[in-house]
Length: 497
Image 1 (cartoon, rainbow, N blue to C red):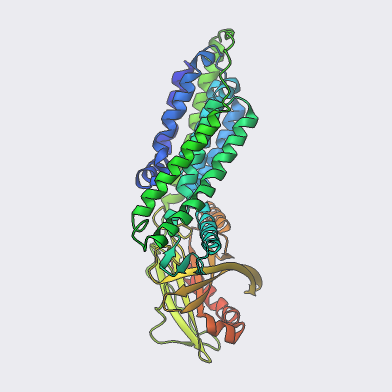
Image 2: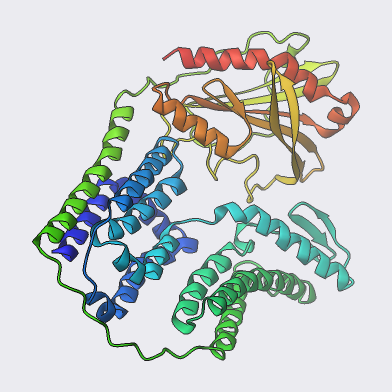
Protein backbone atom coordinates (compact mmCIF):
# COMPACT_ATOMS: atom_id res chain seq x y z
CA UNK A 1 0.00 0.00 0.00
CA UNK A 2 2.90 2.37 0.72
CA UNK A 3 4.33 2.60 -2.79
CA UNK A 4 0.98 3.30 -4.55
CA UNK A 5 0.24 5.89 -1.86
CA UNK A 6 3.57 7.63 -2.53
CA UNK A 7 3.12 7.52 -6.31
CA UNK A 8 -0.37 9.01 -6.04
CA UNK A 9 0.95 11.70 -3.69
CA UNK A 10 3.76 12.68 -6.08
CA UNK A 11 1.41 12.74 -9.09
CA UNK A 12 -1.10 14.94 -7.28
CA UNK A 13 1.65 17.36 -6.19
CA UNK A 14 2.80 17.66 -9.82
CA UNK A 15 -0.78 18.23 -10.96
CA UNK A 16 -1.45 20.88 -8.31
CA UNK A 17 1.79 22.71 -9.20
CA UNK A 18 1.59 21.99 -12.92
CA UNK A 19 2.35 25.59 -13.95
CA UNK A 20 5.72 25.36 -12.24
CA UNK A 21 6.38 21.95 -13.82
CA UNK A 22 5.50 23.27 -17.27
CA UNK A 23 7.70 26.33 -16.76
CA UNK A 24 10.66 24.09 -15.90
CA UNK A 25 10.00 21.85 -18.92
CA UNK A 26 9.77 24.90 -21.19
CA UNK A 27 13.23 26.02 -20.05
CA UNK A 28 14.64 22.51 -20.60
CA UNK A 29 13.18 22.57 -24.10
CA UNK A 30 14.43 25.98 -25.24
CA UNK A 31 17.78 26.16 -23.43
CA UNK A 32 20.75 23.96 -24.29
CA UNK A 33 22.21 24.86 -20.90
CA UNK A 34 19.40 23.10 -19.02
CA UNK A 35 18.38 20.42 -21.51
CA UNK A 36 19.80 17.81 -19.11
CA UNK A 37 16.74 18.43 -16.93
CA UNK A 38 14.80 15.95 -19.07
CA UNK A 39 17.06 13.05 -18.02
CA UNK A 40 17.50 13.93 -14.34
CA UNK A 41 14.23 12.29 -13.13
CA UNK A 42 14.88 9.05 -15.09
CA UNK A 43 18.41 8.91 -13.68
CA UNK A 44 17.06 9.39 -10.14
CA UNK A 45 14.57 6.54 -10.70
CA UNK A 46 17.36 4.32 -12.04
CA UNK A 47 19.51 5.07 -8.98
CA UNK A 48 16.61 4.07 -6.74
CA UNK A 49 16.06 0.91 -8.81
CA UNK A 50 19.70 -0.09 -8.22
CA UNK A 51 19.00 -0.12 -4.47
CA UNK A 52 15.70 -1.96 -4.73
CA UNK A 53 16.91 -5.06 -2.84
CA UNK A 54 17.98 -3.05 0.21
CA UNK A 55 14.84 -0.90 0.08
CA UNK A 56 12.46 -3.81 -0.25
CA UNK A 57 13.25 -5.16 3.24
CA UNK A 58 12.56 -1.83 4.97
CA UNK A 59 9.25 -1.37 6.72
CA UNK A 60 7.45 1.74 5.41
CA UNK A 61 6.60 4.29 8.06
CA UNK A 62 5.41 7.86 8.08
CA UNK A 63 6.51 11.22 9.46
CA UNK A 64 4.33 14.16 10.32
CA UNK A 65 7.50 16.17 10.93
CA UNK A 66 8.20 15.74 7.21
CA UNK A 67 4.62 16.92 6.53
CA UNK A 68 5.36 20.07 8.56
CA UNK A 69 8.58 20.66 6.60
CA UNK A 70 6.58 20.00 3.44
CA UNK A 71 4.21 22.81 4.47
CA UNK A 72 7.20 25.17 4.76
CA UNK A 73 8.31 24.23 1.25
CA UNK A 74 4.76 24.87 0.03
CA UNK A 75 4.81 28.32 1.60
CA UNK A 76 8.11 29.05 -0.18
CA UNK A 77 6.49 27.90 -3.43
CA UNK A 78 3.62 30.34 -2.90
CA UNK A 79 6.03 33.23 -2.22
CA UNK A 80 7.96 32.35 -5.36
CA UNK A 81 4.77 32.36 -7.42
CA UNK A 82 3.57 35.65 -5.96
CA UNK A 83 6.90 37.36 -6.65
CA UNK A 84 7.28 35.71 -10.08
CA UNK A 85 10.59 34.23 -8.92
CA UNK A 86 10.84 31.08 -11.04
CA UNK A 87 13.84 29.60 -9.29
CA UNK A 88 12.22 29.89 -5.84
CA UNK A 89 9.05 28.13 -7.00
CA UNK A 90 11.00 25.41 -8.78
CA UNK A 91 13.34 24.69 -5.87
CA UNK A 92 10.37 24.70 -3.49
CA UNK A 93 8.48 22.23 -5.69
CA UNK A 94 11.51 19.93 -5.75
CA UNK A 95 11.73 20.13 -1.95
CA UNK A 96 8.05 19.20 -1.79
CA UNK A 97 8.64 16.11 -3.95
CA UNK A 98 11.65 15.08 -1.86
CA UNK A 99 9.88 15.61 1.49
CA UNK A 100 6.87 13.61 0.31
CA UNK A 101 9.05 10.47 0.53
CA UNK A 102 9.76 10.62 4.28
CA UNK A 103 6.25 11.92 4.90
CA UNK A 104 4.66 8.79 3.40
CA UNK A 105 7.42 6.15 3.74
CA UNK A 106 9.35 7.39 6.77
CA UNK A 107 12.86 8.71 7.34
CA UNK A 108 14.56 5.31 7.21
CA UNK A 109 13.41 4.70 3.65
CA UNK A 110 14.29 8.29 2.71
CA UNK A 111 17.83 7.86 4.08
CA UNK A 112 18.29 4.80 1.87
CA UNK A 113 17.62 6.89 -1.25
CA UNK A 114 19.12 10.20 -0.11
CA UNK A 115 21.37 10.74 -3.13
CA UNK A 116 18.74 9.94 -5.81
CA UNK A 117 16.36 12.35 -4.09
CA UNK A 118 18.96 15.12 -3.85
CA UNK A 119 19.99 14.50 -7.46
CA UNK A 120 16.53 15.76 -8.47
CA UNK A 121 17.66 19.30 -7.66
CA UNK A 122 19.85 19.25 -10.78
CA UNK A 123 16.59 19.40 -12.75
CA UNK A 124 16.02 22.96 -11.54
CA UNK A 125 17.24 25.49 -14.16
CA UNK A 126 19.64 27.32 -11.90
CA UNK A 127 23.00 28.95 -12.52
CA UNK A 128 22.43 31.99 -14.72
CA UNK A 129 23.30 34.20 -11.75
CA UNK A 130 26.95 33.16 -12.19
CA UNK A 131 27.07 34.17 -15.86
CA UNK A 132 28.17 37.85 -15.43
CA UNK A 133 31.00 36.90 -13.07
CA UNK A 134 32.14 34.01 -15.30
CA UNK A 135 32.13 36.36 -18.30
CA UNK A 136 34.22 38.90 -16.39
CA UNK A 137 36.73 36.23 -15.35
CA UNK A 138 36.95 34.84 -18.88
CA UNK A 139 37.59 38.30 -20.34
CA UNK A 140 40.24 39.15 -17.73
CA UNK A 141 42.12 35.86 -18.09
CA UNK A 142 41.99 35.97 -21.91
CA UNK A 143 43.29 39.54 -21.97
CA UNK A 144 46.05 38.65 -19.50
CA UNK A 145 47.04 35.63 -21.60
CA UNK A 146 47.18 37.71 -24.78
CA UNK A 147 49.37 40.33 -23.14
CA UNK A 148 51.71 37.68 -21.73
CA UNK A 149 51.93 36.33 -25.31
CA UNK A 150 53.20 39.71 -26.48
CA UNK A 151 49.98 40.80 -28.20
CA UNK A 152 48.88 44.39 -27.48
CA UNK A 153 45.30 44.59 -26.22
CA UNK A 154 42.96 47.52 -25.77
CA UNK A 155 40.18 46.37 -23.42
CA UNK A 156 37.02 47.94 -22.07
CA UNK A 157 34.73 45.70 -20.12
CA UNK A 158 33.96 42.54 -22.04
CA UNK A 159 35.17 43.89 -25.37
CA UNK A 160 38.80 44.04 -26.42
CA UNK A 161 40.71 44.87 -29.58
CA UNK A 162 43.95 43.27 -30.83
CA UNK A 163 45.87 44.15 -34.03
CA UNK A 164 43.96 41.57 -36.12
CA UNK A 165 40.44 42.40 -34.98
CA UNK A 166 37.99 42.97 -32.15
CA UNK A 167 36.55 40.35 -29.83
CA UNK A 168 33.81 40.27 -27.22
CA UNK A 169 32.98 37.84 -24.41
CA UNK A 170 29.28 37.04 -24.77
CA UNK A 171 26.98 34.67 -22.89
CA UNK A 172 28.06 31.64 -24.91
CA UNK A 173 31.66 32.35 -23.84
CA UNK A 174 30.88 32.48 -20.12
CA UNK A 175 31.36 28.73 -19.68
CA UNK A 176 28.21 28.37 -17.59
CA UNK A 177 27.06 25.51 -19.84
CA UNK A 178 30.34 23.69 -19.30
CA UNK A 179 30.14 24.29 -15.56
CA UNK A 180 26.57 23.05 -15.11
CA UNK A 181 27.15 20.00 -17.32
CA UNK A 182 30.40 19.14 -15.53
CA UNK A 183 28.94 19.48 -12.03
CA UNK A 184 25.86 17.41 -12.89
CA UNK A 185 27.78 14.56 -14.51
CA UNK A 186 30.67 14.86 -12.06
CA UNK A 187 28.39 14.49 -9.05
CA UNK A 188 26.78 11.38 -10.54
CA UNK A 189 30.23 9.97 -11.41
CA UNK A 190 31.49 10.60 -7.87
CA UNK A 191 28.49 8.81 -6.36
CA UNK A 192 28.84 5.77 -8.60
CA UNK A 193 32.66 5.55 -8.50
CA UNK A 194 33.57 6.33 -4.89
CA UNK A 195 32.18 5.33 -1.51
CA UNK A 196 34.09 7.57 0.89
CA UNK A 197 32.63 11.04 1.42
CA UNK A 198 36.12 12.56 1.16
CA UNK A 199 36.81 11.27 -2.37
CA UNK A 200 33.34 12.21 -3.52
CA UNK A 201 33.74 15.76 -2.20
CA UNK A 202 37.19 16.13 -3.81
CA UNK A 203 35.94 14.98 -7.22
CA UNK A 204 32.91 17.27 -7.08
CA UNK A 205 35.21 20.21 -6.28
CA UNK A 206 37.39 19.20 -9.23
CA UNK A 207 34.32 19.06 -11.48
CA UNK A 208 33.62 22.68 -10.49
CA UNK A 209 37.16 23.99 -10.99
CA UNK A 210 38.09 22.13 -14.19
CA UNK A 211 35.37 23.56 -16.50
CA UNK A 212 36.08 27.11 -15.31
CA UNK A 213 39.81 26.83 -16.03
CA UNK A 214 39.13 24.88 -19.24
CA UNK A 215 36.86 27.67 -20.44
CA UNK A 216 39.60 30.23 -19.85
CA UNK A 217 42.00 28.09 -21.89
CA UNK A 218 39.33 27.64 -24.59
CA UNK A 219 38.75 31.39 -24.89
CA UNK A 220 42.47 32.15 -25.09
CA UNK A 221 43.01 29.36 -27.63
CA UNK A 222 40.19 30.59 -29.87
CA UNK A 223 41.43 34.18 -29.92
CA UNK A 224 44.97 32.99 -30.64
CA UNK A 225 43.75 30.74 -33.47
CA UNK A 226 41.88 33.65 -34.99
CA UNK A 227 44.85 35.98 -34.58
CA UNK A 228 47.45 33.60 -36.03
CA UNK A 229 45.23 32.54 -38.95
CA UNK A 230 44.24 36.06 -39.95
CA UNK A 231 40.70 35.41 -38.69
CA UNK A 232 40.22 32.40 -40.97
CA UNK A 233 39.93 29.91 -38.10
CA UNK A 234 37.88 29.95 -34.88
CA UNK A 235 35.51 32.69 -36.04
CA UNK A 236 31.74 32.58 -36.34
CA UNK A 237 30.15 29.27 -35.37
CA UNK A 238 33.52 27.51 -35.61
CA UNK A 239 34.69 28.77 -32.24
CA UNK A 240 31.66 27.24 -30.52
CA UNK A 241 32.32 23.88 -32.20
CA UNK A 242 36.01 24.00 -31.26
CA UNK A 243 34.99 24.96 -27.73
CA UNK A 244 32.73 21.95 -27.26
CA UNK A 245 35.34 19.58 -28.72
CA UNK A 246 37.98 20.99 -26.39
CA UNK A 247 35.61 20.79 -23.43
CA UNK A 248 34.71 17.19 -24.27
CA UNK A 249 38.38 16.19 -24.32
CA UNK A 250 39.04 17.91 -20.99
CA UNK A 251 36.03 16.32 -19.27
CA UNK A 252 36.88 12.84 -20.62
CA UNK A 253 40.41 13.26 -19.28
CA UNK A 254 39.00 14.32 -15.91
CA UNK A 255 36.83 11.19 -15.70
CA UNK A 256 39.69 8.96 -16.89
CA UNK A 257 42.00 10.31 -14.19
CA UNK A 258 39.25 10.12 -11.58
CA UNK A 259 38.57 6.48 -12.44
CA UNK A 260 42.16 5.57 -11.46
CA UNK A 261 41.18 6.10 -7.81
CA UNK A 262 37.83 4.34 -8.05
CA UNK A 263 36.62 2.36 -5.06
CA UNK A 264 35.18 -1.00 -6.01
CA UNK A 265 31.77 -1.69 -4.59
CA UNK A 266 31.93 -3.77 -1.45
CA UNK A 267 29.85 -6.94 -1.26
CA UNK A 268 26.47 -5.99 0.12
CA UNK A 269 25.55 -7.59 3.43
CA UNK A 270 22.50 -9.78 3.36
CA UNK A 271 19.57 -7.51 4.15
CA UNK A 272 17.69 -8.24 7.33
CA UNK A 273 13.96 -8.11 6.73
CA UNK A 274 12.14 -5.87 9.16
CA UNK A 275 8.91 -6.90 10.85
CA UNK A 276 5.91 -6.49 8.60
CA UNK A 277 3.84 -3.47 9.48
CA UNK A 278 0.36 -4.05 10.72
CA UNK A 279 -2.95 -2.62 9.59
CA UNK A 280 -2.64 0.35 11.96
CA UNK A 281 0.81 1.27 10.60
CA UNK A 282 -0.44 1.06 7.02
CA UNK A 283 -3.38 3.28 7.86
CA UNK A 284 -0.99 5.84 9.38
CA UNK A 285 1.03 5.87 6.14
CA UNK A 286 -2.13 6.43 4.15
CA UNK A 287 -3.12 9.17 6.58
CA UNK A 288 0.26 10.84 6.09
CA UNK A 289 -0.21 10.62 2.31
CA UNK A 290 -3.64 12.24 2.55
CA UNK A 291 -2.29 14.94 4.88
CA UNK A 292 0.56 15.65 2.46
CA UNK A 293 -1.81 16.06 -0.48
CA UNK A 294 -4.14 18.31 1.53
CA UNK A 295 -1.22 20.50 2.58
CA UNK A 296 -0.04 20.61 -1.03
CA UNK A 297 -3.50 21.76 -2.15
CA UNK A 298 -3.55 24.68 0.30
CA UNK A 299 -0.92 26.72 -1.55
CA UNK A 300 -2.37 26.66 -5.10
CA UNK A 301 -5.73 27.52 -3.50
CA UNK A 302 -4.16 30.46 -1.67
CA UNK A 303 -2.50 31.58 -4.90
CA UNK A 304 -5.82 31.42 -6.75
CA UNK A 305 -7.49 33.45 -4.01
CA UNK A 306 -4.79 36.14 -4.08
CA UNK A 307 -4.84 36.34 -7.87
CA UNK A 308 -8.64 36.24 -8.11
CA UNK A 309 -8.93 40.02 -7.90
CA UNK A 310 -6.82 41.39 -10.75
CA UNK A 311 -6.10 45.10 -10.79
CA UNK A 312 -7.10 46.99 -13.95
CA UNK A 313 -4.29 47.41 -16.49
CA UNK A 314 -2.16 50.52 -16.51
CA UNK A 315 -2.63 52.64 -19.62
CA UNK A 316 0.08 55.20 -18.91
CA UNK A 317 2.25 56.62 -16.15
CA UNK A 318 1.14 59.71 -14.30
CA UNK A 319 3.15 62.75 -15.44
CA UNK A 320 6.25 63.72 -13.48
CA UNK A 321 5.28 67.36 -13.33
CA UNK A 322 7.77 70.21 -12.87
CA UNK A 323 11.13 69.47 -11.25
CA UNK A 324 12.58 72.43 -9.40
CA UNK A 325 15.58 73.92 -11.22
CA UNK A 326 15.31 71.61 -14.25
CA UNK A 327 13.66 72.13 -17.62
CA UNK A 328 12.14 69.44 -19.83
CA UNK A 329 14.08 68.85 -23.05
CA UNK A 330 11.64 68.77 -26.01
CA UNK A 331 11.77 65.45 -27.82
CA UNK A 332 13.34 63.63 -24.89
CA UNK A 333 16.57 61.65 -25.13
CA UNK A 334 16.47 58.53 -27.27
CA UNK A 335 20.22 57.95 -27.76
CA UNK A 336 20.06 54.99 -25.41
CA UNK A 337 17.21 52.99 -23.88
CA UNK A 338 17.46 50.25 -21.24
CA UNK A 339 16.23 46.78 -22.16
CA UNK A 340 13.26 46.18 -19.88
CA UNK A 341 10.73 43.85 -21.47
CA UNK A 342 6.93 43.94 -21.39
CA UNK A 343 6.23 46.76 -18.90
CA UNK A 344 2.63 47.78 -18.34
CA UNK A 345 3.68 51.37 -19.07
CA UNK A 346 6.96 53.21 -19.57
CA UNK A 347 8.28 56.71 -20.09
CA UNK A 348 11.57 58.20 -21.22
CA UNK A 349 12.25 61.92 -20.76
CA UNK A 350 15.19 64.28 -20.49
CA UNK A 351 15.78 67.30 -18.25
CA UNK A 352 18.36 70.08 -18.62
CA UNK A 353 20.04 72.58 -16.33
CA UNK A 354 23.05 74.73 -17.16
CA UNK A 355 23.75 72.72 -20.30
CA UNK A 356 23.74 69.38 -18.51
CA UNK A 357 21.13 66.86 -19.66
CA UNK A 358 19.86 64.00 -17.48
CA UNK A 359 17.81 61.22 -19.06
CA UNK A 360 15.02 59.54 -17.06
CA UNK A 361 13.56 56.12 -17.85
CA UNK A 362 10.62 54.66 -15.92
CA UNK A 363 9.09 51.22 -16.53
CA UNK A 364 5.98 50.29 -14.53
CA UNK A 365 4.74 46.74 -13.88
CA UNK A 366 1.36 45.52 -12.61
CA UNK A 367 -0.24 42.05 -12.49
CA UNK A 368 3.18 40.49 -12.89
CA UNK A 369 3.63 36.98 -14.24
CA UNK A 370 6.40 34.97 -15.88
CA UNK A 371 6.30 37.07 -19.06
CA UNK A 372 5.64 40.46 -17.44
CA UNK A 373 7.81 41.05 -14.38
CA UNK A 374 10.11 43.71 -13.03
CA UNK A 375 13.05 41.61 -11.84
CA UNK A 376 14.17 39.25 -14.56
CA UNK A 377 17.44 38.13 -16.11
CA UNK A 378 16.11 39.55 -19.39
CA UNK A 379 15.73 43.06 -17.91
CA UNK A 380 19.14 44.70 -18.13
CA UNK A 381 20.73 48.03 -18.92
CA UNK A 382 22.53 46.60 -21.95
CA UNK A 383 22.14 43.16 -23.47
CA UNK A 384 25.31 41.22 -24.30
CA UNK A 385 24.46 41.28 -28.00
CA UNK A 386 23.82 45.03 -28.15
CA UNK A 387 25.45 46.28 -31.37
CA UNK A 388 26.20 49.77 -30.01
CA UNK A 389 26.54 49.85 -26.23
CA UNK A 390 28.57 47.81 -23.76
CA UNK A 391 28.92 48.00 -19.98
CA UNK A 392 32.46 48.80 -18.89
CA UNK A 393 32.07 49.23 -15.12
CA UNK A 394 29.53 48.67 -12.35
CA UNK A 395 29.18 49.38 -8.64
CA UNK A 396 26.90 50.84 -5.97
CA UNK A 397 26.58 54.07 -4.00
CA UNK A 398 24.42 55.32 -1.14
CA UNK A 399 22.14 58.30 -1.65
CA UNK A 400 19.88 60.13 0.78
CA UNK A 401 16.61 61.48 -0.55
CA UNK A 402 12.95 61.36 0.41
CA UNK A 403 14.19 61.17 4.02
CA UNK A 404 15.78 57.76 3.57
CA UNK A 405 19.11 56.32 2.49
CA UNK A 406 18.91 54.23 -0.66
CA UNK A 407 21.72 52.14 -2.12
CA UNK A 408 21.55 52.45 -5.89
CA UNK A 409 23.38 50.71 -8.71
CA UNK A 410 25.88 52.67 -10.76
CA UNK A 411 27.18 51.60 -14.16
CA UNK A 412 29.31 53.03 -16.94
CA UNK A 413 28.35 52.39 -20.56
CA UNK A 414 30.39 52.95 -23.69
CA UNK A 415 29.18 53.31 -27.29
CA UNK A 416 31.07 52.27 -30.41
CA UNK A 417 31.47 55.92 -31.36
CA UNK A 418 33.23 56.63 -28.07
CA UNK A 419 30.27 58.13 -26.21
CA UNK A 420 29.97 57.26 -22.54
CA UNK A 421 27.11 57.28 -20.06
CA UNK A 422 26.94 57.11 -16.28
CA UNK A 423 23.77 55.24 -15.29
CA UNK A 424 22.00 54.98 -11.93
CA UNK A 425 19.29 52.42 -11.27
CA UNK A 426 16.95 51.37 -8.46
CA UNK A 427 13.47 49.88 -7.91
CA UNK A 428 10.22 51.17 -6.45
CA UNK A 429 7.90 48.45 -5.06
CA UNK A 430 4.61 49.67 -3.63
CA UNK A 431 6.26 52.72 -2.07
CA UNK A 432 9.49 50.94 -1.01
CA UNK A 433 12.86 51.83 -2.56
CA UNK A 434 15.66 49.30 -3.15
CA UNK A 435 18.27 48.36 -5.73
CA UNK A 436 18.44 44.70 -4.70
CA UNK A 437 16.76 42.13 -6.93
CA UNK A 438 16.20 39.86 -3.92
CA UNK A 439 14.70 42.58 -1.72
CA UNK A 440 12.46 43.71 -4.60
CA UNK A 441 11.13 40.16 -4.92
CA UNK A 442 10.49 39.99 -1.16
CA UNK A 443 8.67 43.34 -1.20
CA UNK A 444 6.54 42.14 -4.11
CA UNK A 445 5.58 38.88 -2.39
CA UNK A 446 4.74 40.61 0.91
CA UNK A 447 2.73 43.26 -0.89
CA UNK A 448 0.65 40.64 -2.65
CA UNK A 449 0.18 38.62 0.54
CA UNK A 450 -1.23 41.69 2.28
CA UNK A 451 -3.61 42.38 -0.61
CA UNK A 452 -1.85 45.53 -1.81
CA UNK A 453 -1.06 44.27 -5.29
CA UNK A 454 2.29 44.06 -7.02
CA UNK A 455 2.73 47.55 -8.49
CA UNK A 456 6.44 48.05 -9.11
CA UNK A 457 8.74 50.17 -11.23
CA UNK A 458 12.36 50.62 -12.20
CA UNK A 459 13.92 54.09 -12.16
CA UNK A 460 16.95 54.67 -14.36
CA UNK A 461 18.83 57.96 -14.70
CA UNK A 462 21.71 58.58 -17.08
CA UNK A 463 24.03 61.40 -18.04
CA UNK A 464 26.96 61.77 -20.42
CA UNK A 465 30.14 60.94 -18.51
CA UNK A 466 31.91 64.21 -19.34
CA UNK A 467 28.91 66.16 -18.02
CA UNK A 468 28.84 64.08 -14.84
CA UNK A 469 32.52 64.84 -14.21
CA UNK A 470 32.21 68.55 -14.96
CA UNK A 471 29.11 68.92 -12.83
CA UNK A 472 30.48 66.86 -9.96
CA UNK A 473 27.28 65.77 -8.23
CA UNK A 474 24.91 66.53 -11.11
CA UNK A 475 23.06 63.22 -10.92
CA UNK A 476 22.90 63.40 -7.13
CA UNK A 477 21.44 66.93 -7.31
CA UNK A 478 18.90 65.77 -9.86
CA UNK A 479 17.87 62.81 -7.69
CA UNK A 480 17.26 65.10 -4.71
CA UNK A 481 15.18 67.44 -6.87
CA UNK A 482 13.32 64.78 -8.84
CA UNK A 483 12.92 62.11 -6.13
CA UNK A 484 9.64 63.49 -4.72
CA UNK A 485 8.22 64.00 -8.23
CA UNK A 486 9.11 60.45 -9.28
CA UNK A 487 7.62 59.01 -6.08
CA UNK A 488 4.44 61.07 -6.52
CA UNK A 489 4.07 59.96 -10.16
CA UNK A 490 4.41 56.29 -9.26
CA UNK A 491 2.00 56.59 -6.32
CA UNK A 492 -0.58 58.35 -8.49
CA UNK A 493 -0.23 55.60 -11.09
CA UNK A 494 -0.74 52.97 -8.40
CA UNK A 495 -3.75 54.83 -6.99
CA UNK A 496 -5.45 54.84 -10.38
CA UNK A 497 -6.57 51.23 -10.04
